[in-house]
Image (cartoon, rainbow, N blue to C red):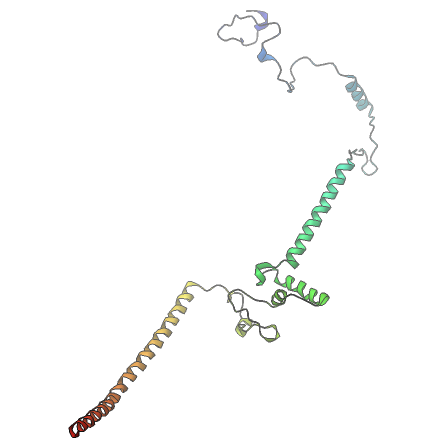
Length: 238
């Protein structure tokens, strides 16, 4: 076996006696961009020798820190153009977000004028506009008064709604929740009972009217019989 292959596995397992090239096989070359600890150490460059000498002497070009003893000040690279760009972008973004938030909260008409989470701020803006300008459009006057979907939009005197009930003032949030299925079934039963009682009353009234009608028929029959007898007498005499 050649000396080059001693202590190494053969490159070609099918032919162990194959001589290794002097430059090595392509698979033994170092991959570009990778570092390995194997191989001959390259001689130090001039910059590396100066750096090592400065480290041994304890000399550093950075000034010592006046705040932290035994340490050095950190030198940062400052890019004025990039810093100005990001500072301007931050201010522009904050301005856009602030203006958009003010418009959304105070000036936009949400939910077609019906009550929403921004109704109070929108009405406050309308009140301030009325105090400053003294005029509002018809739609803005309607939006000054609270209104809810599913109720009549009529507004009474003093800015109160006709459909406002005094019972809701003493109710809690739990009582204002959506009714359950049992409550809906009970309400439907009550409505059905009311309808049945209504139709029963109508049937009773019709029966009473029918009982009164036979007496009227007797009177009408007497009148018709007398009129027929009169006609017969007239025919007899004529």
